[in-house]
Each structure stands twice: as structure tokens, then as C-alpha cells.
Image (cartoon, rainbow, N blue to C red; front, side, top):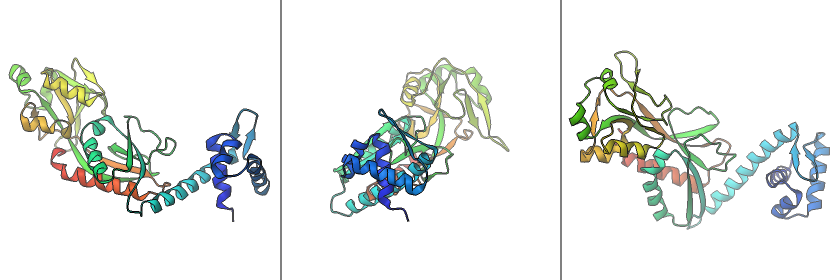
Length: 301
């Protein structure tokens, strides 16, 4: 059976890109690491890397071996993190990637609440609307909205998010209130370009199936906070997650329109890779934000 050390040394060699840097991490000399890789290739009967004076390049066999090495490294590191978490004080870091609408609204409050209980855990939150690779970018988890496409991830639904159409009382007083979705062509509809269905299509409930209405307006943005501000400044109608405008609806600075006809409702999920053993601190963090989102569920639906 192949030794775990074979995988770990090879992992660090490729991650660091040099024998000397890998040697520093694993606590061996450069020559010992080099001999280790040469012996590994000889025993396996394949070349794993191409060596030049400037860089190391993986062969096809090397790429396969590296994927297994990375999985083993993550499992070992996860076990170490989990053991550290058994002490009285949890510490270390948690890296997560989230879409801007989640990071700018409720998640920041949830993280602040978590940090009050675990002050020695450093949270790094990266706001990014693209679906970044968690493993390649060294993220522990992601918060994502909508259907999960990649089966290599584990997902836990945090809450179901209903979308709403709303506008300011002043805009509606001037232009009137639409009675049905087909009336929207008479209104300035502000587009949220981060919608997966397209910035200019709003989803509604039909008698049998949901259907889309094409809208138009003189303002579009990929930033939900800017879209909310535009509505508050009487520019037009917006179609957004309810949580974004929940306080405005309660304060009546925005008014909900066509509430029984809006069809869009998306799950919000915490996801992490199958191949990555979850440290205790990450498990606690996911459970914390789940409970936090559940307490705020009225703002989402």
C-alpha cells in the first residue's frame, strides 16, 4: 500500500512549485525530497513531472496522482483542524465566498454574531457573484442561491428566498399601480442583471405554468444595493429578493406590487466539497448561520 507520505510530499512539491520550498514544509532536505520523487516514479513505473531549471510540469499521470494527493492532504488537514477544535478555544480561519446580495444584507450580521462567540476564529468573506472553484481557491464553503448544478458539492439549505416587485409610494402616486403583469410595459422597470433568468425577464405564476414578462427601463445594475436605492429615489419598479427590501416594506418607504403573482423563489444554500473533511469550526459556522437565517425567515418569505 502506498504511504501517505508519498502523497503529502508530492502535494507540497506541486503546490510550492520547487523542491526547496517543499523540503522546508515537510522538514526534509531538498536532495531527500528529490530522491523521494525519483523513487516514487520508479516504483510506479510512470513519470509524474517534467523537470526544468525554471518550473515543474505535471504529466498526465502526474495530474491524476496530484488530485489524489490533494484529497489526502485536505483530509489530513481537516482531521488536524478538527482535533484543534476539541479544545476550549476554537481558533484559525474560515474562508467563504458569497454573492454580493447575501454578503451585504444578513450574512454580515450573522458573522458578527458568530465572532462574538468565537473571537479567535478569523472569518474571510469574499464577495463574488461568479461561481468560483472552492478547492482551487482554497475556500472552506460558499453561500449560493438557486439550484445546485455541481454534484461534487454538499449543500445545506439555509432558507427559501421569495422575490418581490416594489416601488416607492411617490412613484406609484405619479404613475399608478399595475394591476397585472401585462401592465408592466407602461412602467419604468429597473433591471437587476444578476438574475440567472436574464435582467429583462420577470417571472410570474400562471394557471398551469410559470411564465416570463419582458420588461424595459432606463436603469440596470448588477448591484442589489444600488437597485434598492434607485427605487427609494422614485426611479421605478424593482424585482428583488424580499430580504433586500424587508425593512423598507415594513416602513412603507417601498410598496409591494402584484404580491400573489410573483413566481420567483430560490433556496439559499451553504455548500462545501465532498472531498474536503469539514473542520469542527466550519460545522459550527454553518449551523450558526442556518439558525440565524431561520430566525430571520419572515424577512425572506
